[in-house]
Amino acid sequence: MTSMNTLVCQEPKKLHWEKRQIPIPGDDEVLIK
Image 1 (cartoon, helix red, strand yellow):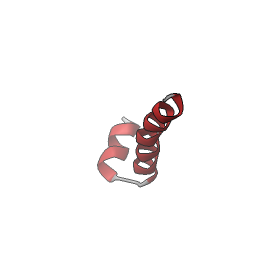
Image 2 (cartoon, rainbow, N blue to C red):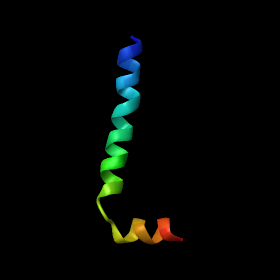
Image 3 (tube, one colour):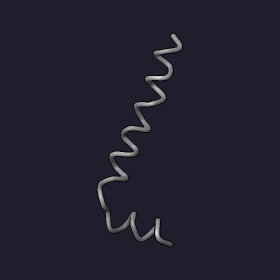
């Protein structure tokens, strides 16, 4: 169960990082500010 929980927790983080790697003008402006 522990390994399953860690996988579930890591999945969203991977998606989040992938999204951050893709340059989005709107998000970049918000991050810079």
